[in-house]
Length: 151
Image 1 (cartoon, rainbow, N blue to C red):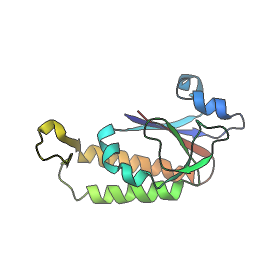
Image 2: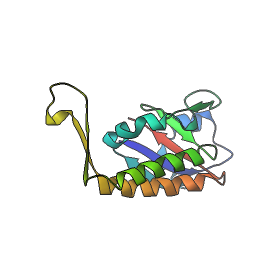
Image 3: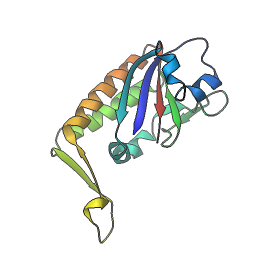
Image 4: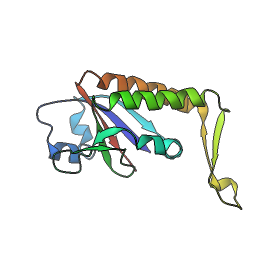
């Protein structure tokens, strides 16, 4: 599961804060505005497009700017990420609206079984994407971070 926390920006958020936020998130309920999860199967399906998003890597000193979400670690999004997040998730939402109720992606092997298929519910995914788009829009004013914790 990939978890995303919309958190208020504060003046005390240094490298240690971001590196320890996930572990100590119960101590930071006062700055957590919202929360959403995205299933690993959905995340894997759309992953290539997530590598285009400007972000910061809070695991490195000074939170250097990068491009692309960290699949197995933490990623930090701010107002510089907002338009890409909104555009990419809106495009996937609009695409999935045209799909079947259960979306399947074959993992490409010549001989495959049902376990080789990634499947997820379209309507649940659309609902999550709508919420994710709303969270991303809130980043635009520069008052929030979207903190991602990968698998």
